[in-house]
Length: 163
Image (cartoon, rainbow, N blue to C red):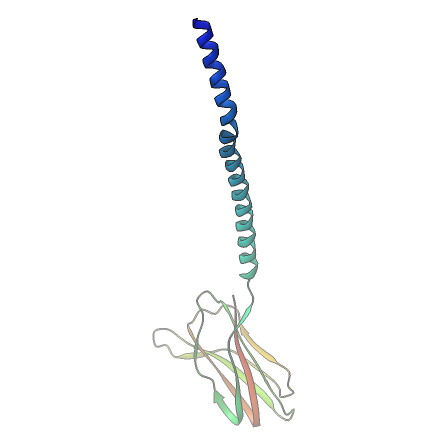
């Protein structure tokens, strides 16, 4: 009699396991799907990080762009602050007329009340082409540009930094 009860109990347990097998397999399948989704998400995160790295590549950025009205003589821009981490600064400028020269000085303010100094200067014709005055180890915080013309011309300039 004992063997019959044991056989019946095993048969019942086998039947219970057979009916429970799809339910037990579902969490395993869900776990595999979750793992696949996590792998896809990790790949997407890696791709997003790579895209962020590409978009964060160093390039020229314009800090200020302005066209000054026709003027003659010596005139200046407003001051600007060098962005944190930017080590290369430049002023691109042009004028039209082809009958005079444009002289551009890039100035910076020294620390501790030591005055101001010309970091770089350049001179070129007023023929509509850009001239560039660039400094490559910019470390001061306050800058401005001055322009000098012998005849009245409009001056267009860009203040840019490389970061």
